[in-house]
Each structure stands twice: as structure tokens, then as C-alpha cells.
Amino acid sequence: MNIAAKKVDVAKEAAALLEKMGVAKELYAGGDMPSFSPVTGEKIASLKTVTASEAAGKIERADEAFRSWRLVPAPKRGELVRLLGEELRAFKADLGRLVSIEAGKIPSEGLGEVQEMIDICDFAVGLSRQLYGLTIATERPGHRMMETWHPLGVVGIISAFNFPVAVWSWNAALALVCGDAVVWKPSEKTPLTALACQAILERAIARFGDAPEGLSQVLIGDRAIGEVLVDHPKVPLVSATGSTRMGREVGPRLAKRFARAILELGGNNAGIVCPSADLDMALRAIAFGAMGTAGQRCTTLRRLFVHESVYDQLVPRLKKAYQSVSVGNPLEPAALVGPLVDKAAFDGMQKAISEAQSHGGSVTGGERVELGYDNGFYVKPALVEMPQQEGPVLEETFAPILYVMKYSDFDAVLAEHNAVAAGLSSSIFTRDMQEAERFLAADGSDCGIANVNIGTSGAEIGGAFGGEKETGGGRESGSDAWKAYMRRATNTVNYSKALPLAQGVSFDIE
Ligand code: NAD
Image (cartoon, rainbow, N blue to C red; front, side):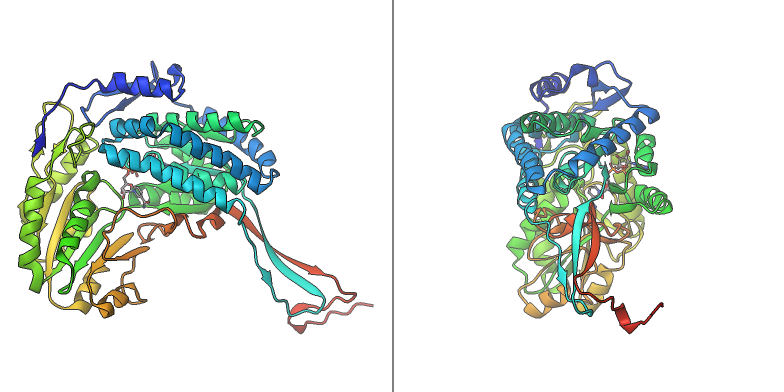
């Protein structure tokens, strides 16, 4: 089913939302950088960009702010993040709607992204009273050894278009309670939602009262402005989310100046459906994982291995779901699949599909859906049955293409599962405990996220998020990801009257 086009004035609605959230008009009207809505493809704003020297000035101001923010007790810093969570609750509907307009997400996903921001704020508030260090047994008598965690500095955040607000909050909420300042370079495809987040944070800062000026900054601009952040000596950590191509550029630049990197890059996520799987459950999880967000999640399911004994039960049902899924205007509640972000994404999808066909792939779906918006790129998600894993199956194409392959041997399918360059998310559907445990074991899935009887997408904020290999190795969000945002000091205190050296070394001077 295709959701028919309704006349929507996305530019007008975006402006009204921005005004309601308190964004100054001069920031998004009459500027030099256009912003487009994938819903209709039309221009919805013209943003004022920063020059390289203005960006450097903002980083300097954030560094100044850091110098006093680091001295505010952590639970008090948590109070600012608590207020941010309150403001996000108050503006959830508005910000969620703006995410739908600017990133093309269906309403529940736009709202879900803001819910994720609220959740990470709650998490960070609790964390502000739990920035624990260890006390460590020392080998020397009359000594005490411990570790303490101190604020790090300015945290640079570079984000991708497909999670335009959540990724900022994963980083910013942790960084702020850890005593850091934040400077954010959002995607040039989704700058309006960044302005809205900054305005919402500024409300929280105003209620907080005495946060230092410049604690949070936004740099509107293209990748050259991102490079200013990456190269600036006063930014000890950059958390960069985006393509593996971007990570290949950013990673070495950060390494060159010994800055820390949290790299959250592309995924080529797979699922395995075993003979004992609950096929109804698997079907729903696969449908959401592969078609949800129009295939534009880093955790989107892109490769599916189905055991030969259940292939003919599952795959025809999946194909039916692909044929009947509702594609359309994401501002309408009935749509499950919204638009691709732009024409380049559409072209990339078509190219991958024709390459898959040249490798023997058989395609269901994949064609453009005309809704009457000339520059809106809507597609039927594509299911491609492949004789083997090769060609485009080995790469991430950031669009809704699911490659389906048949398997017979568990060890062989595990090897195939791991035989791609990316290592973000993975899942297995089985009721066989040995298969499930094996998938999670040292010689099982090599990804940062490995799930049993859940799809690859839709992670909760409580766990550390990130992946291995060409996904970049970074971790952000929950668990102990906060440690990357702080400076660890190991402290040894001698309260004895002697000076014993470690490892029994003697160095006696007269
Ligand atoms: P992209 O790489 O084109 O851009 C991401 C960001 O990096 C943008 O803000 C861009 O301006 C900036 N950038 C690009 N080159 C840069 C450079 N040389 N220096 C500094 N900044 C630079 O990615 P995209 O198209 O916006 O997003 C889609 C990609 O992001 C997919 O590959 C997806 O898998 C990945 N992604 C990963 C995660 C994750 O957590 N692993 C989450 C979301 C998206």
C-alpha cells in the first residue's frame, strides 16, 4: 500500500516548530546553507554557517567554559542534565515532528528518537552520582592506591543525518555530567534539529542558573567545519558518527595529534534464522530491522541467512510483507516506510540492486514509489535472494535492501556472518540453547552487538553502543562508556615513614 501524497507545507511547519522551541529566526532564514526535507525534497530553510575561524572561536569559548564546569560537583552537573530531560519531555512532540520533517522518519520513530534522548538524560543523572574509581591493593606497606576520574575537556561531536538528535544526546548528556564542554558539528543534511536541541539545552541552562557561558556550542557547516573540530588542539576527544569513509579520514587526523576517538561508523548487519526459530517472531523482527527507517539505520538488517529447512516457510511470508508494506509520507500515521534521504541514496540503492542481479540475485521490490513530490525519493524496500554472499552484499548500502541467503551448516554460516568488513550489530533466531550460546561466544558473532531472538536494530541506551572492525571500535551511551569522556588518574599515597620502591628495586643514596 502506498500512502497518497497530501499537500504539506514542510517549510512552514518547520519554521513554526523552530519558533516554538525558541530558535532565533536569523539562524535558519537567509543564510548560505540550504536544508531540504526528504518528505517532499523541497528546501525548508537557509542556515547561517560558521567560518573556520568562528568555529575555532567557539571551541576556545567551550574550553573556557570547561575550565570552570569541571569544578562544579558532578551531582550538581547532573542537575543540568535532569533539567535538559525535563525540557525534552516538554518538547518531545515538537522535536519528534521536526525529526520527521528533516530526516523523513515516521512519527513513532521521530518520537522514539526523542524518547531515547530523555532516557539517556535519566541515565546520565544517575551516573552523576556514580563516577566511581577503584581502590587497588598495593604491594608496598603503608601505601594506598586508587584511581580517580576527572573531567577531560571539550568533547567534539560529529553526527550523521539518520539519528540527527539522539546521537548528540548520547554524547552530550554523558559529557556534561563528566564535567566536559561540548561542541557539536551536526550533519549538513539535518542542521535544523541541531538548532532545536541547542535551544532546548539553553532553556535548561537558563533554569540551572550558573552554568558557564559557552558550555555547549553548535557548528553549522559542512565537513570542512568538522575538520576544524577534528584538528583543534583543545578538543581531546571527538565522537564521530557516520560512514566508514568519514572514519577513515577522521581517525588518522585524531591519531596524529594523539586525541581520543570514539568512531561509530557503518554496519553490514546480519541475522541467522535457525531450524528451531519462532518464525512469527523472526518475521516481525526482520521486517522492522530491514525495512524500518527506510533501511537508514546503522543497525539496519542487511544480510539474512535462513536455514534450508525453514527457508520455504519464512521467505515467501517475508516477500509478502515486502509487497504489502505501506510506503509514504512519514508525516501520515499510516506510513511504515518513509523516504530515502536524497537522490544520491536512491541512486546508490538502484546501483546495488543491479549489481546484485549481475551476481544472480532475484529481486522483490526496490522500485521507486511516486507520491507526486518531484524531489521526494520513496522506494519499495527490496528483498534480494542471493545464491551466495558476494558483490554488493559485502558492503553497506544505506537503503532498504535485504540480501537473503540459504544455509545448511551452522559453523559455515557463522563464518559467512563474520566475513564482512563491518562489525556493528547481529542477531540469531533460535530456540536451541547451544546455537544461541555459540553465537554469543568468543568464536561466535564478531560484532559489538549480538542479540538472541531480537532483531539487529533498536538498541536500548543502557548498554554500551558501538561495533568492531570497520565500524570503528567506539562505544557510547550506557554501561561504562562514560569512562572515555574522563581522564583517569592512578594515585598512590604513601602514609608510612619509609620509601619502599615497587618491584623490590633498591636505590639508596647517602
Ligand atoms: P557521513 O559520513 O556522510 O557524514 C557524517 C558526518 O561526518 C557529517 O556530519 C559530515 O559532515 C561529517 N564528515 C564527513 N567527512 C568528514 C571529515 N573528513 N571530517 C570531519 N567531519 C566529516 O554519513 P551520513 O550519510 O550522514 O550517515 C550515514 C552513515 O552513518 C552510514 O554509514 C551509517 O551506518 C553511519 N552511522 C553509524 C552509526 C553508528 O553508531 N555506528 C550511527 C548512525 C549512522
